[in-house]
Length: 285
Ligand SMILES: Nc1ncnc2c1ncn2[C@@H]1O[C@H](COP(=O)(O)OP(=O)(O)OP(=O)(O)O)[C@@H](O)[C@H]1O
Figure 1: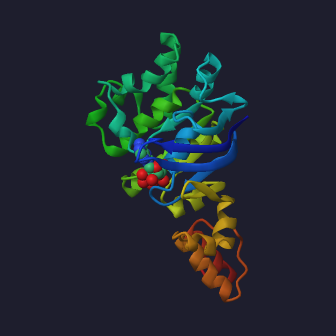
Figure 2: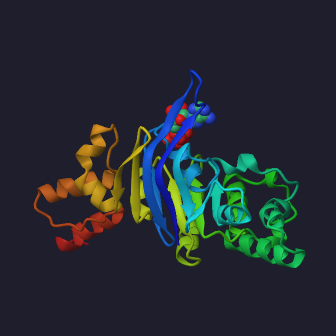
Figure 3: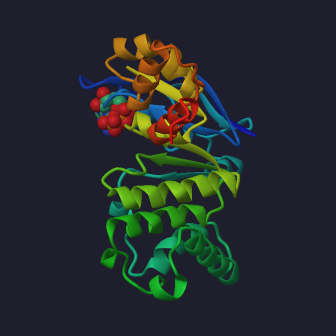
């Protein structure tokens, strides 16, 4: 099972003086079971890329497909394929609209045409999954919740649709450190326990290094690097600097330690773990 982009170009406002080519001949395949982070500067094309991946935007040239079904099609099959790719937008709490948390989470499953019992079961399960107690929250207004809780409601709404792929645009933007950790714990559980592929747009190199297994670096509408985060941060530092990006602090620290002769693994995602490893090797406590 995979989402495939073949030679995709996307242009905003074609044929007008404001024409902007946001994606240029992008080819890419993402398998079920992957955890992909997409990083790049503001305006590099990240949002345009992920919206082409879930069929919300349709390529001007090239094709976007899921298991061979064209995501821009009008057939029932295309609609079903789009339904298998969930998307949580940036600041999803801005898109909550229903009077109760229950109704918000139920919106997607209801649109899928599920019967009431099935819908009810999906809502309960999704709320449980994101750590929102059903009895406490189901009948509350989403607007009476904290930012982190509202984001959980939005994620639950997509989880309730049982997607195979979940695209998250800046899932931790604007959250305090505690809520960030909670949201990432949920995302990791979706990935590990439910086997949902994750495609995450982020401005945070640290988050990309820590969570993703594959990193796509996008610059001016093109994917310039595609590989394991550790490999990219270790081997492509100069290419990143060339396009005005940097590597996570922990990689700089590791580099400095390597320069002193320490042999360290490629995948380094956490400064605390790195320092603990250094101490261990030096026989320190
Ligand atoms: N609706 C639109 N109309 C016209 N141009 C657009 C539109 N949306 C995006 N663009 C332009 O397309 C390019 C890519 O935008 P996109 O939103 O995909 O970038 P991004 O990497 O997601 O940026 P950010 O990090 O700021 O969210 C930018 O130059 C942007 O100005």
